[in-house]
Amino acid sequence: AFPAGRAGTLRVVLRREAPDLILLGVSDDGVGMRSDLEDDAGSALGWRLVQAFAEQLGANVRVSREQGTNVEVVFRPEG
Image 1: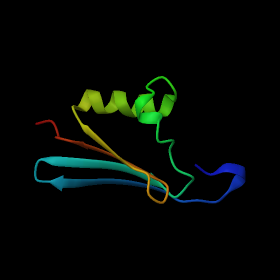
Image 2 (image 1 turned 180 degrees about the vertical axis):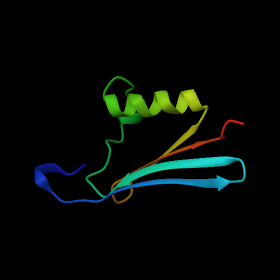
Image 3 (image 1 turned 135 degrees about the vertical axis):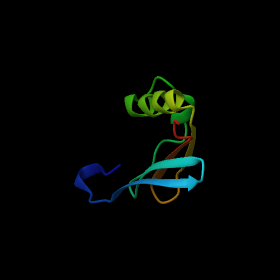
Image 4 (image 1 turned 90 degrees about the horizontal axis):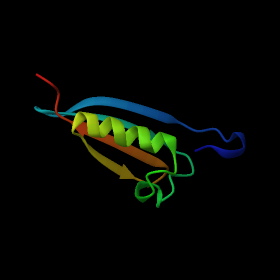
């Protein structure tokens, strides 16, 4: 996200999205995630981990590439 020692900001958010939903978001203001990464499951360990985490939670994943990268995992809490 921050090549050549470039400074940047990483933000992690955990909040209730609705009475029955929780949002876990990670964003940065770096160079952005490759647009083809979501379709290429074997290309990056980090993205495979996000997908596995979301699958275990039965979560939806939302990705935005405006001004860096923003990945949100939205899921229902257990019990």
